[in-house]
Length: 266
Image (cartoon, rainbow, N blue to C red; front, top):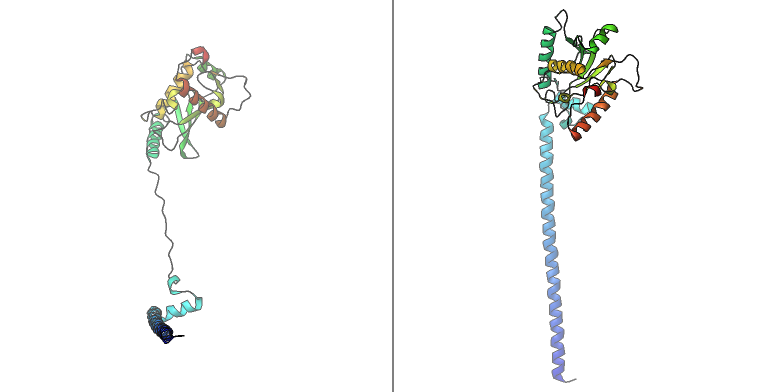
């Protein structure tokens, strides 16, 4: 090997050793820096813990000795040691439009009709429920066959059942005949009543209960209503049957409209 080549090899070896020694010094410096950061974090954590411990001691110290002893005996934390008193909730009375309207009409009918010697009709609440009434129709057209039937069969009145929905007077009441059983006169299965003003389309909020009852009395006579002496239908004369018949009636008239039938058709 020539002397020149030997010098190049020696220079390369020295350069390699020199770079290696520099790399080792950098790693040591990094370890030293990391250790310093870790020490700083530990110091901050210890300081934070001391602050929390101090605050916790202050909270506990703020309690009175007697309260602290009771809490310790019952094993209750300071956050849950406060008693929550029950709230006395009072329900507001019903001052809805429906209630005011029905109360007003009921009092007026009681004053005018129930006080008469021979009233056309009378009303009463069912089980003191302002939204459910019985109405008794005592008088119909005296020249009608229906009035004759009532006299011959010794029937003093026609009993009606009225139910007022939540949105009354903006929706009509449901009304049906309870007794006696009537045929024709726009009275349907179960005692349902075929009157346009009792449907959502024909109803107006200005209609009163008195107007509805008087209109029904006129419809009975106009439709040639008669009291059934012998029951021909096997269907039950009940509220459920009446509601089903009325729903079917409303659907039919919504589809085809209201057409006044011939008197012979009832």
